[in-house]
Image 1 (cartoon, rainbow, N blue to C red):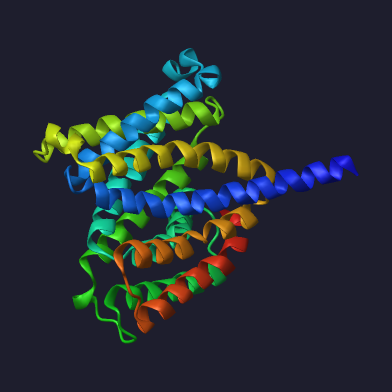
Image 2: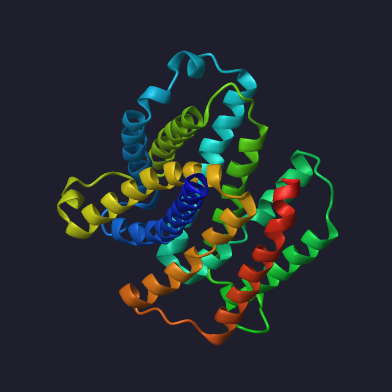
Length: 305
């Protein structure tokens, strides 16, 4: 009886952890808007990731085997390099631009379709089998995306919102992160992979910011909104990874993924309360189509990817 109660309690804690993660994903978009008051897009990206990586290094220090990291196979290093650059720093950069230029709920519902992009990568890179049901759900999801992005029941690509384009690019690039994770060997543990990817993302973000001519304004650190954004961005980066690891260790992957869809609810709430963002009928229906498609597809995706 005690053992069953214990399992039930852990299960509830895991679900609660993923609810917090869902809220954290929405708060990261709020953080992007706050940080935009003082920093250019890629600069705020590498600052958030750098601070998060340093704090996680301290928290994970007992789980990090630096010799294993230094001696990782060349194939793993190249995969981590692509995950850090494409699936993290560039993906977060596009996500930041999306949060600045589109409604929070629009960014979130479009980003909910990331599993479909992961499936496409898995099909082309991992040679996973073609699934007719997933293709149908993918097409349905894309219809929902165009409705959200164009705010119309009869979507036209010519009026596709700027922020929504960035959200779609963020979705496509972030999906590579999850597929890359599947390609890695067992040489590194989860904590070592996390730190390695975040370090690569921070360094690549810094180099891209330099190439873009972005600079840091010291006076930005005196702006309360910017400081709040930095705290939220860093804190959420620290919170998300450990909670996801814990939750998915105690929950079925499908159930866990479904719980994370709650980030759409939080995005709608934060957008309305903090920015008075209103959602039109076409956007609402498009969002429901996207989330419903992902909800149904998760059952098949976890069997394939």
